[in-house]
Length: 188
Image (cartoon, rainbow, N blue to C red; front, side):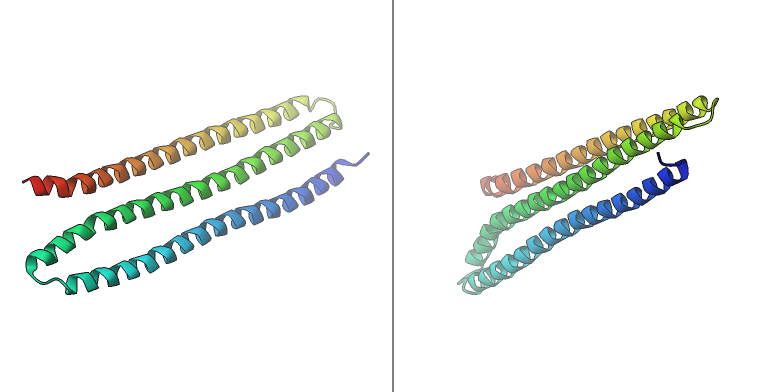
């Protein structure tokens, strides 16, 4: 049987190893999200440059002001659709990355909580007589911390969902305005 100091030493070592693994997982998730955003931004910049060059050539080939403005107006809708698609992709990448980070943190918290409760149980078995109240108080504090963490996680998830819904609504309204805008302007 291990002594209590040795149990705490082993638990501390395991905790540090676990923290390093979580740090590595969180870093990996964050870099994956950054990598996806960088790739998206490079692709968007490349496409934008190509589209701008093409549009500039078309506009320079316009024979009169009416043709110039007609070509200009025709470019607005595709550009807006590309902006909407870009916003949706950014939203998807960020929400996916946030979900991955949340899952790693949640798994770590659950595992750490389980290990600490196990250690407290083991220490409680070897504790001197009369210390049962202290052990129970510590377990209660851990339970309250766990419940608080669960509530914080739930609130953060609800906030994230609300933000994503608001972004999707704004993108939908923007798409609708772009789609209906030229038709409404033409009917005036």
